[in-house]
Length: 540
Image: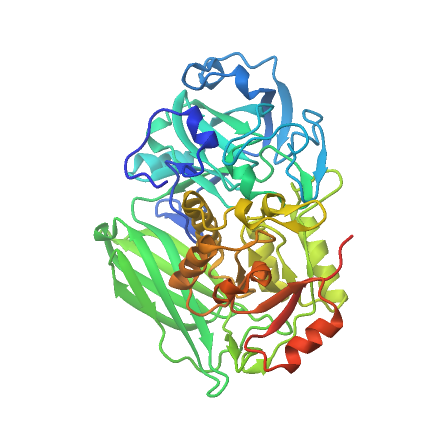
């Protein structure tokens, strides 16, 4: 559900309503870096403030709280009796909820039997609180006509958010950012953010991944300020032509309050910081920047992950730098040609693995060092590809894969295995979620949209995945269409069509799980129309 006007009060009904998956959320956008320049001090700032660290929390039964009369959201609420918890972190790892591991079944199977999209009565909610004071650089930006958002980079499974006692918004899909504009709710001095994080919501029907079921705010939470003139989204095509050896970059920018900018200039720099191309454009709300043909550009690949830096500078009418947006880019061309996957004109074979974000002590609240260790392991063991099974990963992972050279299949946060596969591998098409059920379409399309918008500019992302083990149906056609409406170049993978070949049109690649060698050979010898990937072939 998208909202043109702010909704000011929370509703308990959203939890079990599959058509409500966000309220007051900022539209999904690219994860490019933004910096502001202080002309008086000549200092640069990224205008971000971490809210990580110690929070207060209490875990209660969901039936025990009342939304719009709940005292824990108030500024002056006494939370001294609450537990202390580290964010990012999981409630289970802090000993506040029990660990659960479930494969195909839903975690409530055998205990309760709710009909989708309803949720179990035995539902926990974690009441989080954090006190903060805005950093001066964020407060100055706000006072100069900018905005301030609060960003939850990862949570499970649904959150309601309040700031200083005022309702902010509601969000699901905890593996892509849930960002809310809180500009009007902030004041000088101490502010209080309160979050009700629910164990189960209708979103739980879409998140039946085979993993440890862990909850809470498990990725970073931060404040992000944006100047009055702000580049909200960058969608960059950085192509390399293997026939001519020339490259090109085309960037589509969405600029907020563009009329208050005088010019927008852009530069492209190599790894040594030398400018290889530059230009200046007049400001426009939807600015397009094109380099034309570029010579001497080295192409990006896993074997030679050469990155360039694309920098866009916004100048206001007073001649001051309003904002600088920066995105690392890799020039490469990934295509399916005559049924074969190619990168930069050469055939590519994926030697890959599926990867969960996981640490035995921190769960999915992994660190940058965990990610670096995984990348280095891949490079040492001749693994060139990873499928982000079965959800979008932390933003930093994509930057590392760009830098080190790892090909990614970026997977939507979607798995509904327990809805259509009964014990004994009995397929029940009529119970499949989302299937062709219209009431699930909005949430599923939103999930793939959030992933594609966030990760579009990363050269490491070669293929988009619509999800994992969720059967198929018309909802997947809508997801496939959304991906190709945004991105006409990258192919889409979805293995679920192997259960119903009427939906072969929702995948550009033939992908199978645990297929025997003879079955793969038979497919490849019989005039295959699509390239083949074994997207799962061994499990431990």
